[in-house]
Image (cartoon, rainbow, N blue to C red):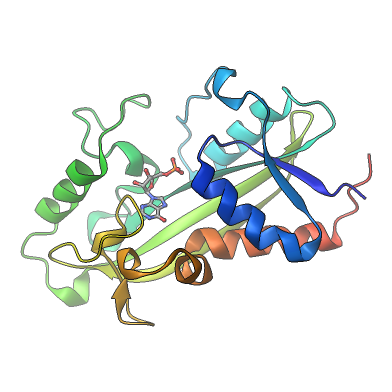
Length: 209
Ligand code: IMP
């Protein structure tokens, strides 16, 4: 039974979250060694699944025989036809379809607020989506998805988290994601839900090899 999973990220926060959640399952989470020196994968897929698979497959070739986990995530706003979606990280960049351009969180949030100006609360529904792909030796073994349903406020609230968290109001607990502790966020978030689905898959999959 393979009990070690390498995550395709250089983000220590994400690693800590994943490692903490995996520990009770007896699964060890670590970063791919020398991740930042590997050639970057261009995230130009049309869906979260396509990008997560592309990353997991490419990075798994760098660590033969290891299970590699990659994630892709973003925000879908119903009133904007699902935008920013796979363009979430670079929504405010001059050219949203230029797959390699990035814009910072504040500018992305400002664009969302501009585009939703005048849209009433009942039409501001949105969801965060996270797709995780697990691959070995260049082949995806499984993808899992987690979502969190909420709505976009007219002004930011809260100082925690990152990205669109200050705009994302989660009615279930009456707070934005930027008003949650890391433990609370992992309990309610799309990323937490996807990771729990991944852990259930690990518990049942036959991961020998
Ligand atoms: P990536 O999958 O790490 O590339 O993230 C894509 C983008 O989606 C991020 O840069 C954020 O703008 C947004 N995003 C994804 N997950 C979250 C979250 O949990 N909170 C806020 N923004 C998020």
